[in-house]
Structure formats: structure tokens, C-alpha cells
Length: 476
Image (cartoon, rainbow, N blue to C red):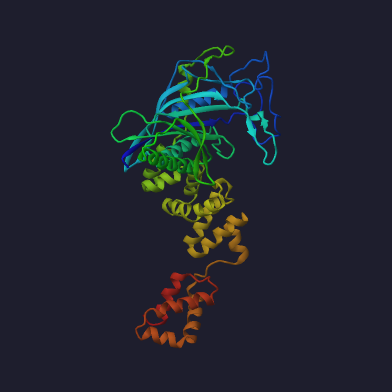
């Protein structure tokens, strides 16, 4: 490309508090429409907001984890605009004195590390939710979401490809999950992302005409939308056209963006200080208290995994990318100390099952004790590796404990040398031609004989011992 892509991201994170940002209404998801509202979040005259202390502490926790500077004095502002899902006709947000600024996240890019600067992390409240019933000539509004506590996390325009945007979002989500400040569920709207993208000739310092992308409901959707928009903008520029500043919606079904509205200039939200909330002094002692209580974050945990468990960079990155997966892995290793074997099973068959069912490891139904027990049965020779894979699949499907499946179905592997030798002799006596072929130099015939022994034992014979005893009986 002769153009450079420039991307900035705005992430809205819904905080997992029990009550809303400025009132006592419940934040529980999926309740009856308009059942979790009050005069404050509906903007009734005379109602007064009160800042949620837990949301405030969560916000500081996020800002510290993202390497931001915390301001000593912050205030809230009214962001004024009219929309049906905003009953007050303004949103309580932060403008010129946000909670924090100047943070960063480092991502892997082009074989090295790239720093994505975070311009600001500030607090605000969410709007309600508009719904447009298909086939009906009306729109409905659910104000349950109105007033939910949000953080807006805004990057500098440091991202230069859709893949970098995807990698940044993946790492950001991982950090946020480790902090346990949000469920980060994009399907519920707990994590939402808008993207600004522009192109400029390589070497040019001035930014090109910015297009804002909305309606991207997954990180893959963000990447796909940006890839499409990157190509679209390049095509317009190559044809001598002129890009306009606009907001475009990503249509995942058609894999295209479509214009929503044009912007001749930046919107004027007529910010002014929220008169019902005094400015807040952020106590340095409280900041340090929260900093000391921060959990081990993905990067630090990955470094520890590499050191303690001798894992590769790739294995450590995958296993620490989700806190539940990392916790599960460590619990398994405590019960079964062969860390590499546990990693292989988690990143192989178990990850495949998680992806196939689109579930988290906490929903798998197989406890760390269950997996450790399965691996110990392989080591003891009670079952083979192949049998273990079948048992694992059944355990995931039925939620049964692997040891119970083995006992119930009588799947214990035959490892007794005498019992295996009896089966081997029976097969050797029956398969005279194949035995003669083997003794005549056709070594591949051994595989057939092994297969016949396994068939005779109904798959229960220890394959290693079968090979060993067959060769002995055949005179090798």
C-alpha cells in the first residue's frame, strides 16, 4: 500500500457494580423493560445524583492497570444532546478534567513490541436502549440500561492495521477480565467498541479524513469492518475521489459498511460542569491502596508461567489470555505436576471442545481434579492416550467424572503381561500367513498383528506392551 492506515479506538466498558452510576437502581441484566429505573436515572426534576463509590474505585483500578496517570482533582460534566434513549437530554460524563490520562498497552506487532498510547480513561453513565420491532411501525425504549456505570477508554491514533486493532482489543479485554471489574460480554453490551479510521500517503504527518465505524459486535467484527473500510478508502483515493467525514455502520451479514450520517465538523455537545456533583479530590493514599491490591495481570502471569512451568512464549500467552483458563491450568498443575502435559491437553482437545461449544472453561463440566485424574490413569497404564481422548469427550458431553466413566464401562486398560501374551499367542496361531510374511522380512505385517491383538482385547490392551510381547513371541 502507498497509504498508511491510522486507527483510533473508543471502548465503552460497563462496570460490574450492583447499582447504577448515580442512583441505587439495580444493574442486573435481562430484567423486565423499564423495571429498574427511578427519578434520578429518568432525570425527573429535583432528583439528585450521588456517585457510586464502587464504580469510582473500579475506574481507578482500570486506570492503574492501563498505566495511566490519575488526576488529583476531577469533575463531572453534562454532555448535551437529544436522543429518545436519553431522558435527561444530557449524559453525565467527563470532559476537560477526566479521571485519568496518558496510559498505554504494549502489543506484539511485526516481530516486536508496539506501544499503543491511551489518551484517557473517564467515567460516565450509559443511555437507555432503543428497540425497533420488525414489521411494526414503532420504536420502543428500555431505560433499564440508562445510568449504568461506564468507562470510556480512548486510544491515541497509534494503530496502523486492522490486525493491530484486534490485538489491542484482545489484550485490553484480557486485562479487564483479570481485574474482575466487568464481565466484558459483548453480546450483553458490557463491552462496546467504536473505531476511527483514516488513510494518508506514506510519509505524510497530517491525518486524513476520519471515518467513524459503529455497530461492530465482536473483535473479529471490528477487524473485518476496518479491513473493508481500509480497502474502500484506498479505492476512493486511487480513483481521485474525496473522502467525507462520516459515521458508517458495519453490516456483518453483507460484510460492508454503509453511511449512517455525515459530519461536516465535530459535534458540539455544549459541555458544562455538572452542577449537582461537586468536584472530587482523589486521595493519593486511596490510589496506592488500590494499586497494591491489583491482581497479577496477564503479562506478569505469562512471565511467571514461562519461568515456573518452562512453557514457550506461545503456550504462556495462550494460557494466560483468559483468567479462568489460567486459574484452571494452575489448579490442574497443583494436582498433576507435569505442566507441559497439562498445557498440551488444555490447548489441544479441551480448547477444541470449548471453541466447538462456544463456552468458557468454567462451563466445561470437567473439574481440574477430573482432568488430573484422567492424566494419572494414562501414566499408571490404566488407560491409553487414545482411550483418554474418548473418555474426555464423553466427560465433557455428560459432565461425568472420567474415573467413573472408566469404572462404569469397564474401560481399564490391560497391562498385565501374562494376559496380553495369551491374546498375542491366540492371534499368532490364527494369522499364520501374516506371521510368515513378517518372518520373511515384511516388517509392516507387525502393524496388522498389533491391530488384531487390539481388536481381540476390545481396545483394552496396552499398545506398548502389545508391541513388545509380539516381537518376543515372534522371535525378534
